[in-house]
Each structure stands twice: as structure tokens, then as C-alpha cells.
Image 1 (cartoon, helix red, strand yellow):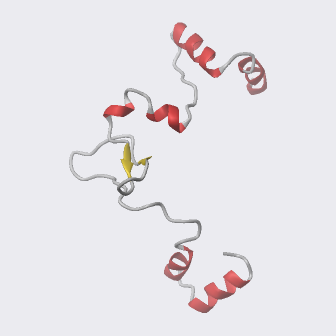
Image 2: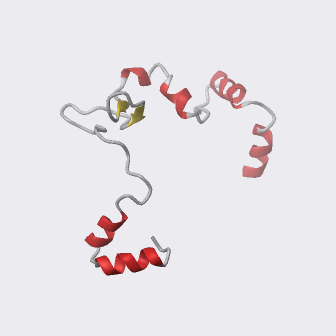
Length: 107
């Protein structure tokens, strides 16, 4: 069935199918890009996007709000591997173990 539906859905645009689905009273939406999603009217009224730091573009935090506190982004996301040594140390690896893993290209 997946293959058959895949071929059928390829015959029209995602926007066309979304309109067809709505017109027939079926539940369904096309997958939106992040740019499209943040432009949705409903999302503009929710605390979903927050800047990481002054001047940074807003980033997704949570699709809901909290009465008190809640998720916020107050620093940039970590870089790739930025906390590797920290995590390995928490798991009981020594500095020498971590250096060896780096030398071997494992981390």
C-alpha cells in the first residue's frame, strides 16, 4: 500500500493534496518547512519561538506554554561534540581514556 500511495501522491503537489484532503473532510496536513511552520497564524500566538541571545534568530523551544517558568533558550545550542569529554567523564572515563578515544578517532 505504501508504494501505491507513494506513486499516487507523486502525481500532484503537496499543497494540492492538502487542499483535496481538507475538501473531503479528512484529517491530514502536509509536512511544512520550518519557515512555513513559523509563519502559521496559530504559531504566532504561542511561545514556541524564542531568541537564543539578543539579535539571534528565533528558534523552536516548545509547542506549548507554562503557567510559570518553562523552557527557554538562553544560550546557543552546543557545537558538535562540545560536551563529549564532560559526558564521558560523567560515565567514569578518565582523561587518559578520553585522550585515547580521541587519538583513535572514536570521539
